[in-house]
Amino acid sequence: MEKPPHQRPELAEFWDSRFQSGCMPWQDGRMHPELSRFLPTLPGCLGHTGTTPNAPLHGLRVLIPGCGHAFEAGCFAALGAHVVALDFSAAAVAAAREVLTDWKGELVHGDFFTYAPNEGFDLIFERAFLCALPRHLWPDYARQTARLLKPGGIVAGFFFYGEEGKGPPFAAAPETLTQLLGAYFTRIDDQAVANPLPLFPGERWQVWQRGKTELAARLE
Image (cartoon, rainbow, N blue to C red; front, top):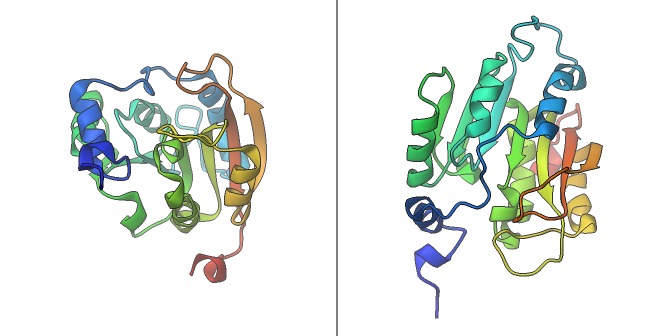
């Protein structure tokens, strides 16, 4: 028998129920130290030169898929980036709207897998999105991430390592993640996360860079 929608994490109803009930152990509302350390290095990773001291990310486009409350969106925007925070849960978007009360980015209620903006992104920030997806969707996640990034763009964030049991969160074995993302990206940073949330033991901060040539054949 098929599970009802609120018990299927591939459906928006599952996440709507979590936000409506306040059951969100993956969020703590803080700027994580790993992200704080990474942000000053981002322009250099991308070879981006049009920055100013007050807006080091000026001119860069950032996507946060599965944004939830989108706490990090304001941090990127404050540094000059154009930020798109995306979630397919209406309840999540409503929660993010309460957080992002005064900013110039975009808050989009939509499906990551069908999202088709007119312009690509320099950075996709990963925070508890991949591990929220059932594993049969992971190849589509990797392919769509590569599609949405500009050549040379970066996907950076937190990746949940562990035994590949039930979820969410759905943990990944190291070799699984390497195989999944290695088809499109080169890993340029990998380190253990200090003081991870109890929900994510074994979490790692990683930075993956897309090749600077087009990937049309692999993205078909």
